[in-house]
Each structure stands twice: as structure tokens, then as C-alpha cells.
Length: 133
Image (cartoon, rainbow, N blue to C red):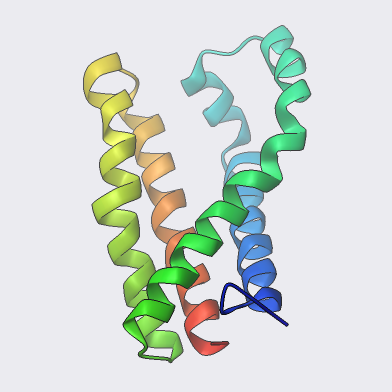
């Protein structure tokens, strides 16, 4: 099934993969460090739970955006998709994410973890979307 010329199943699979990578990084591998780097208290983590329903929005928007660029390039294949995902991560997502690090003086470790997250998720989603075009 296609929506806006995009393979809906591929977009949903890429979004799920983005979410899964984020879950592994932030909830499994680096959970305590991430909470520490954010400067959160236990009360903060509980109050943030109200925002969790929005967690589906970000991966969907990212997957749709990556899928659109891959469609516009019209060069199918997992490797081209991976390259597109990495380029979008570096030139848009990481660059935009740098504002918080540069101007808010947040911890470099947090910026590094977020950068790793963006690079991995965009590359993986791009590979899936490129292969499944």
C-alpha cells in the first residue's frame, strides 16, 4: 500500500526500527548515565511519562522524511538508502541538535549519545527504506 507514493509498510518498519534503536540506547544500554546526564530526579522521570504517547510521532516523521528523499533521488537500494539516511542525520538532525549543546551548554556526553542515536537510526531507517522501495 502506498501513501504519497511511499511504501506504507516500509515507512512503518523504519519507524519501528528507529524506536527500537532509541529504546536500546536510552532505556537499556545507557539508561542510568542518560538520566544522570539529563540531570533528572526520579520525580522528573515520572512527570515525563505523560509525554510518552508522543513517542510515535518522531520516528514516523523521520521515516517519512527519509523515505521522501530516497523517493526523490530515485536510486533504490539499501546502500544508497543508508547513505541518504547518514547525510540527513549529519546535515540536518545532528546540526539542529547542536544548538542545544552550543547555546545551552549541556553536557557533551548527552550530545554524543544523541548524535550516536541520530546516526544509527537514520542510517538503519535509510537502509530499510532504500531496500524496500
